[in-house]
Length: 181
Image 1 (spheres, helix red, strand yellow):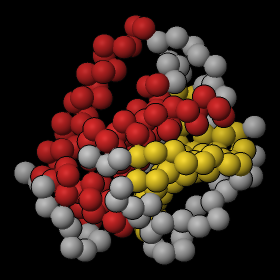
Image 2 (image 1 turned 135 degrees about the horizontal axis):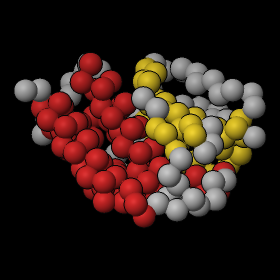
Image 3 (image 1 turned 90 degrees about the vertical axis):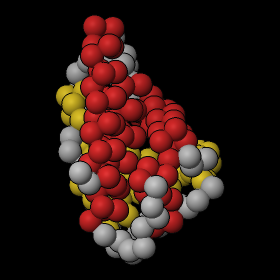
């Protein structure tokens, strides 16, 4: 079995187990830009430090779209109680370090496993943030990965945009959040 598939299966089992334990305890918490940002910051710090041994610190959050992006973005939608789009933007150095932490081998090239890992990382962060929001009517979409220097992630015009910037010990990380007005 592919080592990445094994890691994915273990992560999925962990998330499903947490969902089963908390399903009956969900409350309908207020969903606004500030609460979603807070959940994304906490989820990023938790997922990256626990799963990938990456130290993460939120340095600044601002309104608007990102001026500059790293090489890779994992984009995940949230629907149901709100409509949101989240882009987890990572550098090649960060994702290579994450791959080495999770799989035990540092990639040497941007291959299909690395691209899959970007999507999985976005899924883990946004899924963890969704859990932290404690709202039963949120549905997590499937991740899409965008790769390339200078790539563009276009958010719908009816969304309020925020950029969450982080410092890490291994490379670039920022999150772009769009929430429907």
